[in-house]
Image 1 (cartoon, chains in turn yellow, cyan):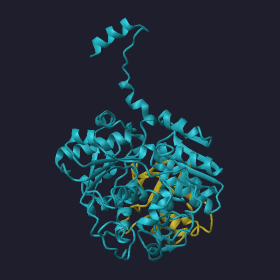
Image 2 (cartoon, chains in turn brown, purple):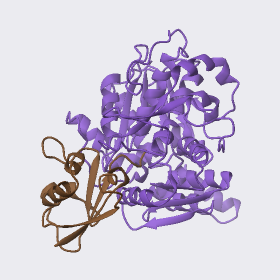
Image 3 (cartoon, rainbow over the protein chains, first blue to last red):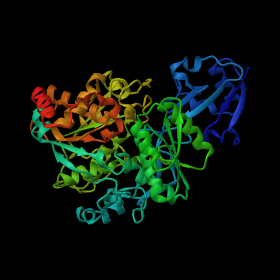
Image 4 (cartoon, rainbow over the protein chains, first blue to last red):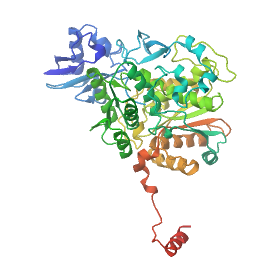
Length: 92
Length: 425
């Protein structure tokens, strides 16, 4: 169940410059834990002390905001693409 | 030259040099410009501003880009009009309209884009891009035409025709995305990681957003260096709303308001509140996309994103980046936030047109309807000095008001005219 994760610039230092990482996972929370095992400290950047997605981080599963799905409990499956995108952009 | 020291994360306080960067690497918080106010206070005065050009660049010392040779299509210095007709309708004797619909590309976006485009050229970019709900695309394309650089503008495909044509005419690369604004914005955030482009509202955002401070400066200057008791402002991401407030407080701290002593900016330039700034900040959103107004009325400190469904497409940002900061401004200023019913938007457009001769887009309809509510509820008293910001032009959203077209159809004869005219009287 391989999922492709797109890494935004602010996190690429942690992934040794990689802009994409493949992870085996069935649930988003598990995916974040696995990324953290590979890149220590990764989870803290995305998840707050209460275990919730940080306010300024958006995660999209195949282009859909996981906040409108099951958050970190959202199921993932083979071939899915995850994007981690800073929330502070756009607008007026 | 610009009097800035760098960038600073609004959340964790980490500092960065002045680069094309919008988020903190550590906490993803927004980066804000840090000014050298000590130097600014030595060079800026009411007189220095008065001697400047009739555009936002009269405030160049207070902006984060060099102002000696800016990308300038004469954004800003728009009229502040005493609104006698609308005021009479609403029982407000001291009402003014800041008519920003008459900017060169017909919205307030020219203010922010002029700053962002100037900064982008300073950084050496050759392509300027944006994610847009329409007005921004028009402005970016216009400024790029002026600067002679490439524009790549991304818009949701369901935009009003006036905004699409209004951007395309300047010959940018126009990318029409089958999705919502928030999806366009997400796509552009990802593209900004991989393309060496200046995205005005992504990697240029700290500089870009500062352009809206001029909406505060101009109103103060046009009121002879006084601040209004109330301002009524439309809001999507909340950024413009917070920057108007910041502009008022900068003027106060720098001693540029009449009768106000200058004071320190304190430890946090972005949250400074000078005691002389008593303006109440009233935010208006459309009910179909009102995440900030909803958070305010539910007393939430966080803003929960929504999926927009509103006639006011220029305000249809479901995930407002500056929402939490806008709520803090409402709190500090003892202002308010209101979600205007969708059914009131067109009424607001018509009310402004019929009482003041100003044709605004749907966002302006939201603002005027919100103002009406504030007046009716007594939140704004009849003699209080009130400024309502009209930020976009009605010709961009004519689809919303097509119903007003109901002419007297006649033959080219006196008799035909008189018959129809008698019936219509």
